[in-house]
Image (cartoon, rainbow, N blue to C red):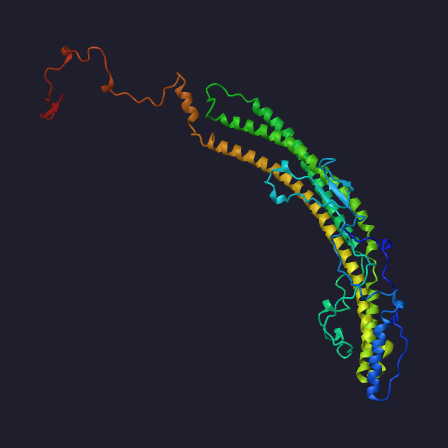
Length: 469
């Protein structure tokens, strides 16, 4: 994990006394003259002497204003104590904690969205390297930054209190954008402890899934045995009949048994991977807690020194507005402003060290959590693949059943039975009529009629005649 080294490995920033003191000395202090011209000459002389005094050798032990404070560089080649490689190659799906060279980069696994749903056979292995980036060293040289505004040389009236007109607290010397108290390592440890609980629950759930597929495999085996022992009696269609349903179900049970056995193996790999990840997280949590010393800081102390220096400068500027002759020598506003600038630089050095420590901790926590989430996603993706293959198998047999035996006419088997059994009459044979009957002598000339017509017959009672054949 990318965190700054502990304070014990770096030089601490210089401590400062509670009262405002300024590391400047002068060869002499000119007393003010009564006349205005003499006062101006004395002020110019003191300013020149003060400027010359800054280059004296007695100030070599103080911060050098010719250098500048550099912004923290988070991408250094410097190694750290929290550098590990997460590789799944040595032990299969589980996670091993290796310690490669600091120059190794984190190899992120492919996104889970790039997988085809259910394609758990091509899941990426966890081969990520968690690398520590460099931190800000407190013993870095301080260099005075360029002036924030253009000022007339030698003029003390051009200096304005920044805090009096700056309402944006992000630019205030009395504001720190990062927490100066608290224990972020404890918060991060609790975060990954919660992830360990999530992993524990998932492991229990996937174990139940594994037991389910073990029982399912046994049940499907019994079901397949029953289906295979069913024989079709004679008189039924061997294909394209109702017996096709059993054929489809036999194939379905066979595929389901294969998938259940495969699911048991996949679940074992998933459980091993999650168990290994949970064990590795415990070790990571211990390492995170050991980094609590990196967040001990003196930002509040430096800010208090800055506040006192600014107050002193404000008081001197107030006196300067009343009587310029009273703010000479060590109380020259320009020199006091330089002291405030240096104190602000020391404060920002401490603040940036702490800020970079937070950034490194957050970046490393993000990478570690990405590994955890990636493993959980792979576990879910494996289970989704199992469910998809089961659904595809079920969907296929549903389509075959609906397009075949279920859509079959209800008299399809009966028609086959009656048409292939000599004890029954084929219902397709029509009834016969007399004109369809032929017999020997039917068309002989001797059997043909000579004259045919209607005869009238007298009624017995009505004395009438009725036509008839």
